[in-house]
Amino acid sequence: MLDEASKRIREQKCGNISLIQADDKIVWDKLESSFDRITATGVLQYLTLQEIDSFIFNALSHLNKGVK
Image 1: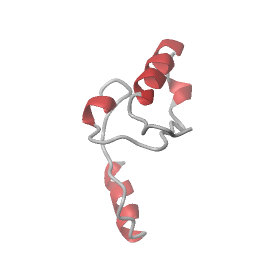
Image 2: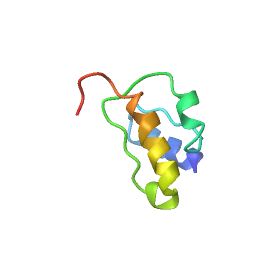
Image 3: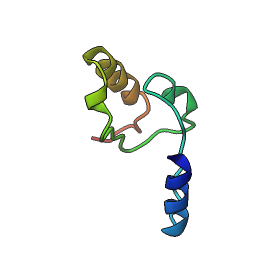
């Protein structure tokens, strides 16, 4: 799946996208920066309520200051 995504990114000439392979637990250890927005489209329906709480808690610490 990452190979196909990489191909589409190259075809669209997008230069500001990085792909990583991770699950909801280890993704935070693989990130090297913070973000203005974090989305989880197509993911949350597969997580338990406890996993969603953990995901949101960890996501908050990777958001840039002052974003909404």
